[in-house]
Length: 250
Image 1: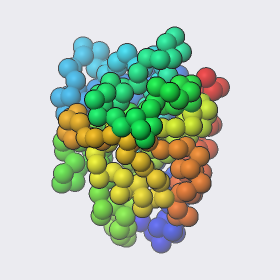
Image 2 (image 1 turned 90 degrees about the vertical axis):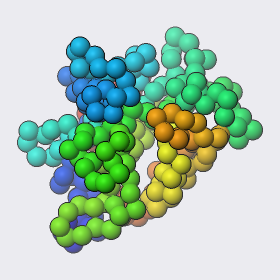
Image 3 (image 1 turned 90 degrees about the horizontal axis):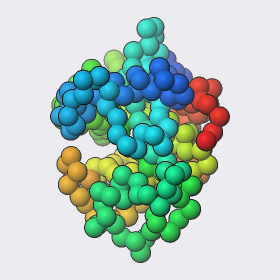
Image 4 (image 1 turned 120 degrees about the horizontal axis):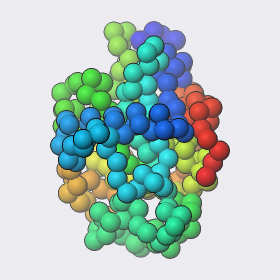
């Protein structure tokens, strides 16, 4: 990583990666194939499908983004999605509401009482194995480690991939008028997010869902305003690329 890239993480991100909204069937197909490779073939979280596309009932009311390598032929690197409220049934639970039905602390926040059109869940983060080969990453779909924040001249150690995907989900949230994001993650993720200036609030007890996970929430505008100075250039790069590749907001 050059000295310029180290202090201009937006330039560093664009040097190695590009991100796009899955606004057409071709890109969505790439998203579903990455998910199948990671969730079905490698981690065995889901059964393998004959068409090698991992989908579920939430995809019909979700928006997706795909991270690619910046160099041709721009191979898929990872993906995530934003599950929106089901327009046909706004009261229908988001995935985390089902998984955490018994552990949510509704005295902190009750998703059922919010404007369902303005909430969403970040889910199905997946990074292909070639891009997460370090120790401890083999059995997880995406990872952030403390060492990722210690850049060296030999390789880009800043966690561009997971941070780019999360910021892609935030950009999709802005485009879809979402105020509050929910996420089901490893407990340690909050400490990593705090390094970026993101306030992640735990809203319930842990559940065993592909490992121990805790439900958390984030305020979309607070994320954007609170990003640390060094992260803002990545946000601007991600937001611009998502907007340029997006269909009109739903």
